[in-house]
Image (spheres, one colour):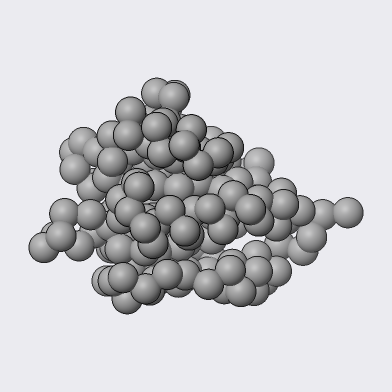
Length: 157
C-alpha cells in the first residue's frame, strides 16, 4: 500500500541517467519535489506519460517543483530513454537493490518486478502532501498533476 499524505518522505540516494547521485533530502529547505514512479523505460504507456511531463515541464517550473522520475531500470537504460525522448529532468535508477525505494514508498509490484505508476508530491520540508496511484496499465492524468501542484505551492511570479 502506498505511503499516505502528511508523513515524512523516506530519503534515498540513487543514480540518475548520468550516474550522478541524487538524494531526496538535498531538496529539503530548497524546493518541493514531484517524485514520479513509472514501471519501465521504453514501454508505451510510460513513454506517453513521461512525454506529457516533458511537454508540460513549465507547469513544474512555474511552481518551482523539482520533477524526478524513478524506475527499476539501469542508469544506462534511463540515459538512452532520456536521450531518445528529450527528457531534461532526472530519471533515477532504483535498479539495485532491485526496487528498494519503490518498496519503501509502498508501490513495488512484487509479482511484476517493477513499480506501479505512482506520484508523490513532497513539500519543501520533505513531507508527502499529495499522492496518486493508478491501477496497473492505467496512465496518470495531467489534470491530477495540475491540481496537486496548485494545492502544494502557488505559482511563482
